[in-house]
Length: 136
Image (cartoon, rainbow, N blue to C red; front, side, top):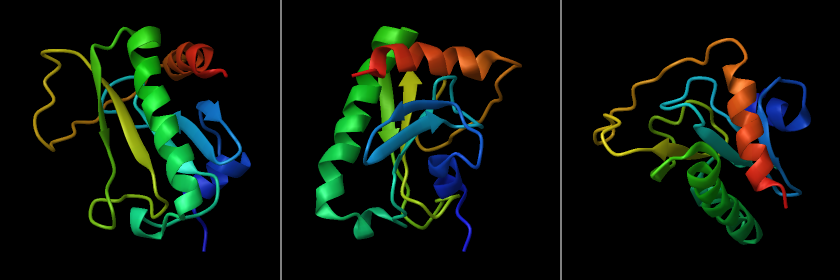
């Protein structure tokens, strides 16, 4: 069964990758809530949090913490929204953590996630800003 995020991890599906580590890959969501919205996925296919092996828990959530920090320093966000869906509202059945840059008054309310699009070249610029901070 084909998996879009496995294709991103393998490089067969294009994406603006911001984090490429042995266990975790991070890339910009192509329909971001706000520009810089990043998805973090285990490199191996895992459907949901319930199936995440213990040995991947620390690498995945460490990447989430570092990505959240990068959004404040690289993008000037005041904070972040970090979330994941399991089965319900999980548009791609591959575990993924959303890390969304936030600023006071940005209009995000509750669990309503309005989506936007990047202008030409804009995703690459946001990805580069995050990569510069996430490089270990």
